[in-house]
Amino acid sequence: MSTLQLGLIVAGVVLVIGVIVYNQWQERRLKRQAASAASADARAARTPERVEPTLGAATAPPTASDGIAAFRGDADFESAFEPPLDAMAPPAEFVDDRASADEEVPVAVTAPTAHSTLATMRAQPGSRSAAMPDHEIECLIPLQPAAPVPASAIAAGLGARIGKALRWFGRADARSDWQRLTADTPGRFGEIVACLLLADRNGAASRAQIDMFVRVVGDLAPTLPAAFAPPDIADEVARAESLDRLCAELDVQIGLTVQKPEPGSIAGTRLRGVAEAAGFRLAPGGRFELAHEETGAVLYTLQNLRPDPFTAESLRLTATNGVVFLLDVARTADPLRTFDQMKLAAKRMAVTLGGELVDDNHRPLDDAAFAVIREQVDGAADALRAVHIEPGSARALALFSA
Image 1 (cartoon, rainbow, N blue to C red):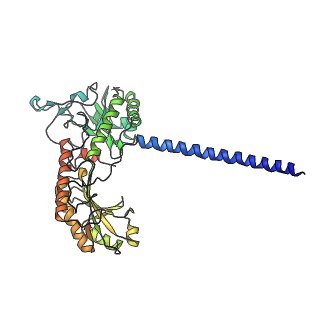
Image 2: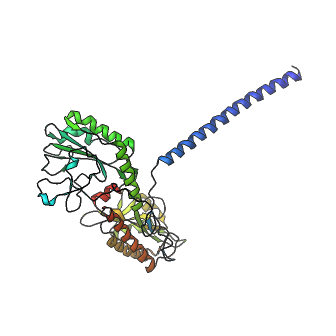
C-alpha cells in the first residue's frame, strides 16, 4: 500500500470521526436549548413563590433583622398591588331563609349569577363557619337534583382529586342548613354545591384544574339527575389569580432564632428534652409544634436552623447550631398575643440552652427590635382583617395551606 493510499484512508477515518463528533455536539446543544426554553416557560408559568418576608431596613432599628418580621411588601403594608373589588368582598353566607326579612342584607355575588342557588346568598352577622360554602375563595357549582338524593349518589365526586381542596355541601331545601357531605352523611339532599378552593400557598388554581373540576361535576350531574350550569372558566381563573396575588401580599411569617455561639452546638437529645418540657411535640413535618391546649390548633413551631428536618432518629444521633421559632400570622388566632408568648418561650430556651436570641445577621435582638416586630405582627393581622380574612379562621386556614 502506497503512502498516498494510507494517507487517504487516515483522512477518511478522521473525517468520519469528525462528522460523528459534530453531530453529537449539535444534538447536545439542541437538547440544552430545549431544556433551557422549557425551564424558562416553567418559571414564567409558575405563580410567585411565597417566601418568608423581611423587616424593612427603613423602619427597623440597627438591631432588627432582615429576616425577623417577614412579609412581602413594605413594612407599613402599603403594597403596590391593589386587589380587584371582587377578589375578596365582605363575607357572605348561604343564609337560612327562615330568618326574618329585616335580617337579610343583599350582597354582591361574585360567583356566576346564572346559578339560581348562588343568587340566594345574603350577608349574615357573624363569622363564616368552616361548614359553609365560601363563594369568595371557592369556585362553586350548584346542583339541583330532580328529587332529593343521598350523599352516596355523589361518591364519584367526593373521591375526586384535582390538586386543590374540593368540598361538597348539601341541604334538604332552601330553608335548611348546609351540611358538609361525606360518603356516610345521612339524609337526602335537594340541593348540592361543589366547592373548589381557588388559591393556597401552592398558587392559584390553574385553568386545567378548574376545567377538570367543571368536568367532574358535569359528568356527575346526569347521574342524579340534576340541573347543571357551568361557570365561566376564564372568569374563575382570573378570580383565582387575583386571590392568589392578594394572599401572597399578606402572607407573613415571623421567625426568632436561638443560636449557639461557635463552635458550640446543641445536642439533639438535649434539644428534644427542653422542647418537650416547654410543651412542644415532634410533628411528622420535621418540626416541633406547640398546640393550644383546648382547640389543638398550632400556635407556633420550632424548626432546625439547618435545612435538615427534625426526626426522632436525627435528634438521637446529631446536634444542631440553632433553632427557629416560627409564627404563621394568617394561621394563628390572636397573633399578637401568640407572638408575645413565643418571644418569652424563645428567651427562656436561649437561657436554658446557653444560646443567643439573634436575627438573621447573627445580631442579638433587643427590646427595640422586638417592639418593631410586634407592631408588624399587629399590622399583618389588621391587613388580613381589612380584606375579611380573620387570622386563624377557616377561611385563613384554607387560603394559607400548603
